[in-house]
Length: 278
Image 1 (cartoon, rainbow, N blue to C red):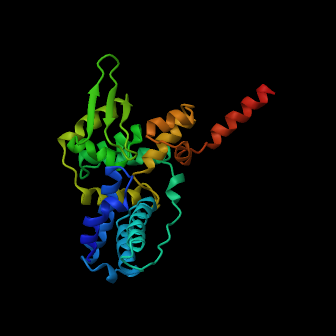
Image 2 (spheres, rainbow, N blue to C red):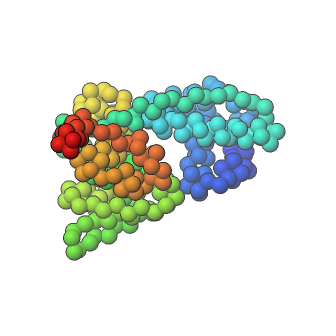
Image 3 (cartoon, rainbow, N blue to C red):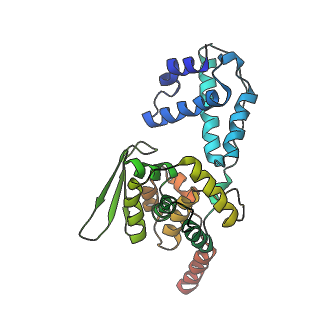
């Protein structure tokens, strides 16, 4: 049985209990094996085929977190095949440490991103995406919804000027409501639906910006906007982990804690308060 046929027949069983969104994303990740290597009988699948896909993902500057999700999807696919006696084939692909989880954009980097986005050859939508992510902590895939308005709704509150972005069927299956008050971010969010996104161009521009602004740091990723937003809420706004988690759309506070790291200045401020309290 070929990989595509196996997926079509058993995908609901492999990812039974998962949300439709999670199952669809997992199936599409396994299908990338076919895209890279061609459809083939399951028994021909080798570890080299998997590494060929992972090398391509890393070559396109996908984060290790994303690569790990591909590994998890392929592992689930193979585990199910063994469980029903379809195959005894087994090889383990180790996930890697997600170093990007502790990366934040510095004020200088944010200024550099703004300057790069204003270069005459950089399309307006690129800067709009960065601005929206900076002020909302939205994921790359969530920001992309603003181009097509798929599973997203915008409501402008005339009373206080706040723009509410409602995301339907998010990563954890829940809807999420995100308020936007910064004028630049409101303008950017409203503008994206008037543009056409180009994935290839985005990757090329981000890679160039990584070299110019991020000093070629491989962890200079779009997802860092999300980390930085969480850090700002925790350190500058002194919001507790429950509020930050609700904003980011996390069901588990343990997930939120990975995004929040106290700055040196914040710890110093706490020490001063402790001294006064003592």
